[in-house]
Amino acid sequence: MTEPSFLSTHDPAPYHVWPARQRSPFLLVSDHAGRQVPQRLGDMGLSDEQWERHIAYDIGIREVGYGLRDRLGCALIEQVYSRLVIDCNRAAGHATSIPAISDETLIPANNSLSAHEREAREEAILHAYHDQIDRLLDQQGEEETVFVSLHSFTPHMKGPEAEQRPWHVGLLHDHDPKSAQIMRQLLEEEGGLCVGDNQPYVLNPLNEYTVPHHGATRQLPALEIEIRQDQIAHKEGQEQWIERLARLLPRFWDRRKGQST
Picture 1 (cartoon, one colour):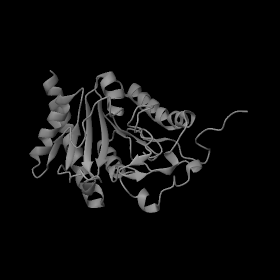
Picture 2: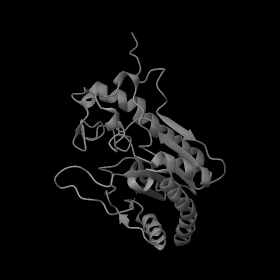
Picture 3: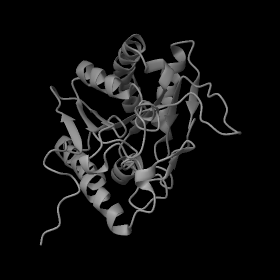
């Protein structure tokens, strides 16, 4: 008997692609835009209130990504399922890929999973999403492609050592510090922004997957942009960041190309 797929015919596809409307160097990806859950997992043992928190998805980034894609005319791929089902910015088998605890909150549906259950989520969601990113990159070509990964971060984590995070936006980098440096200069020229350099997180292949797997492997110019969630939790803030990034990203690319010659 053929084993049923982890995702049923009633579940949405694991990613949504907004195709490019014009030639653009930018490809936008959003690993934590969605918070869908496969029917078989129900509410995963969490309350409605927990599903509104940052542990479930990157608050505000879906709206920013869509608005930015609309302004730039570039392609955007969004991951549809909640990071609590599987975190698509983690390699298969990573300790935090399918979290049993997230920011001091127990995730009952993720406790005591078998290797088979983990592999089913990886195959249906993680690999499907990243395979589609590869297809988009192949279609776009690598001569003039900027890989832009969009995220948002909570202003503070729980726990005794948690501190308020002062950065309005962070630029994460590993293989391509030049791009982060140029974008940081542009953001700081705006005035009034506290810009983090590998803050609030450090980007490397041990703790992230998307940019190392696609950007570093192909040696593409890459930006990972983290916006603090209180900046984009409302429409006004989302529009401000859409306008800002739509204006600065083309300037970034002009400077980046100029420094490469």
